[in-house]
Image 1 (spheres, rainbow, N blue to C red):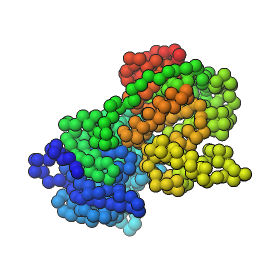
Image 2: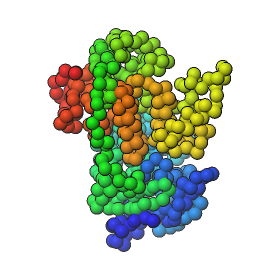
Image 3: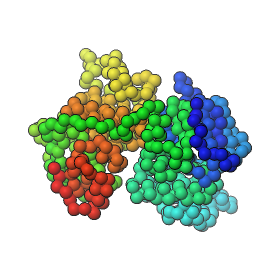
Image 4: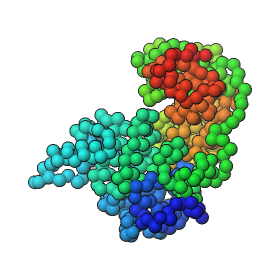
Length: 512
């Protein structure tokens, strides 16, 4: 039952949006059960919950992708039926999904007004659209060239185009789904300013994010879903971070990060003078048994480019890689995997999984040798092995035949992790391991990383979330413009220390 005792709506305002007793089922899954949501003009409502809690289903009903099995939707007090995306737009709803709905080869202007062009005799009134687009960008507070092709815009600028699309359709309600996932820290600050401006204009904003610091900065109220049910809606100022986490996961997490001291052994991985053009320049570091080495830095600092060289995805210009005293020759990911190095990529959908295959097939792809019997793959052995990891990692799947594309982001990440754990890799590289993953699943990933370190594995973790880097790492390598800016023992290190190195505003600290 929802706890709305502190919802803070006793001022008798009429809600801009009311979703009452909304339910939705799919074959074998009860996605939502009697969920209630209210959104007021000029309010930012944070919608929180673990992956699979029902957030996406709720938003897709508001966007006309799914129709509710039961319940009602009202906008400005009038009950409406939203059964298509067009009906949603006509009702004043603008939804900005995590994966943008833009045509890269069209300009910002063309994307904004696509489908609603106004012109005589089938001619598009380009000058009028340009002027209208500039007015929209001015209203948002971010200058964007209306005639720039969307493929040439930054992620932050593309997001502004999506917001302009919604405002061009007279949206009263704007939904933002993980809007900061691919933004730099500076761009995130710009996003905050945009949300504040939408609030000032009386637009209701539903903001979905797993980053609790964003929720604390933006939200007026917080609504939590768990297992398809409405757990509660609270005033943001009346609830602590620990209480939010407990509402989301249904249990108390004593700390946001596991608090444990692991024994650190001998040096296992040694990287010396690794270089590739301007992206990676003379990078050297080592990782010891049982150690988690965090790699921090701004977007474009060379973090991902460095680990791609370790994994054989790119060819280095210079440098050496040594594991347990053996100098490795890594010409491809296949060579890296064979020699005990595995990478959980930043882009799990594009590079970590074959989305059209089943979860079991994805698990088996790099492990076929383990399940080969007389020249054939034993699906029985593969299924048994996968089932062990489903239990160990708490992967939420209906079975091994479930298509990978249908899983939540957190469960997709766990499937990627499972296939590498089956390989029994000695060096495991996590590139943004918790991006787009809810707080409960994050904690499980953290526990798993600690367990792997306890087994003597060498762990490398790239993360753009500095609290995560500080909360998990034994040492922290900071990169700036393709070079190592410093390597710090994680004792009394602050976010400010890391940012000074990451921005090049502090002298290089010798890597240890």
